[in-house]
Amino acid sequence: MAQDKPMKSFTRLLDSAKKATEHKLEDELVKYPWRRPFNATAPDTAKPSLKRDFEQGLVYPITDDVSGARKAANLDPMPPTAHKFVEQAEKKREIMKDIGIGKKLAFDPEKRVYKY
Amino acid sequence: MTTSKSKVNPDEKYGYFLGCVMPAKMPWAEKATFLVADKLGINWDYMKETLCCVRPGVWKAIDPDTWLTLTGQNLALAEKQGVTLVDSCNGCWITHYEALNELLEEPEKMKMVNKHLAKANMKLKGDVQVKHFLQVLYEDVGISNIKKAVKKPLKLRMMRHIGCHARKLGNDVLPKYFDEILEAVGVKLVDTPYDSMCCGLLFYFADPKTAIYRNVFKKFKLAQDLGVDAIAIICSGCYDQFDRGIKILEDEGDPTGQLPQGFDVPIVHLSEILALAFGYKPEEFGMDTFRTTSPSTLISKIKGGK
Image 1 (tube, each protein chain N blue to C red):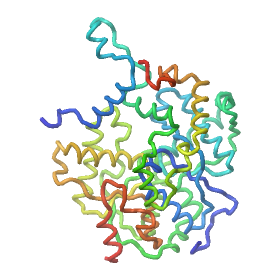
Image 2: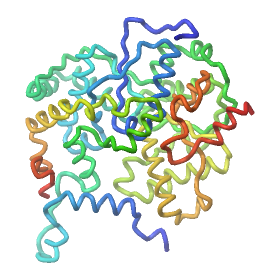
Image 3: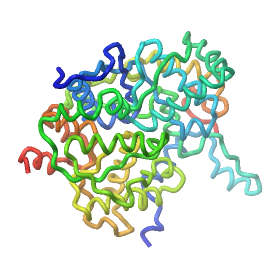
């Protein structure tokens, strides 16, 4: 039944979460089948968008296509958000570091990957 | 330029908080919002340097103190810029509204937030106002002034999707404002059993099939069956989810068989509807570019004056 097939968009989302994670839980479960699975604080479904949040302060990037569409709408190609004011995203990262949320989520800002 | 006397306080500066979705996926709505504000004589500009709101459905679930602190960063920016923070996205609004109330009611949390903000040389006193764009239109501008600005009443039939967070203050506030504003510019609203059904945005991350096949496709099927001219929305988060639904339909088809012919009903933002009614041309805000369902039939209908 077609409805039983996994939804491609959701599979892509989980794949991008796997790519952003160093620790490979599926491999570990094959190697150590008796080991209790580890659940990271950040759910896989939220990892890709949280990563972008860490990196640019916002969830969606301003790509060339977006800039073109903004021009077509008679807008500045770059919105006056943290996309443009990158120092505000830097401040956000400083605040996050002070809170220690990166550690809780096991996100390594240098390597830009989740350890788990 | 204004066409009617506005009730808006000229000393109140509104700072439009774009959020994540509006600048990246809905430039036509962003531009239309500025055209509408200009026409209504609102002291309107961008709130600058903004970050993600931050998403309550994600951050609040992961760590409530982080949610409060990062939301506090945006509130501190609005305070420093001396603007009333205005959201048109319900998700952004609910996070700003709830975080500000929580921080004002609980001084210990305000202290905690300021301790972290200080690391970035920022400070939040709490001397800032948060408003939904619907509140600005309905409470500050007023329905009568919106009606006075109408040049071309839109004789269109629309389904509306207000979104869940807009019900926070009850159905007599934002949902009522939304309906009355749409009706003020000539839109004929078609009531349906799915008007208050969630778009499924957050649900998608837990159960994507139910979120898309039930929450989105059921609504789409009904819109198509009813032959409405458009689905009117206000929330960027809901738009993002509907947009996802359209892309999934195009890429993967519809195994539930609800939409065998695809989906072609445009999903339009309230600001676009107002801009058209106020006499702006669709090209002035790029209405027919960069969207998954083309509003070309709607545009032809308006231009043809049918």
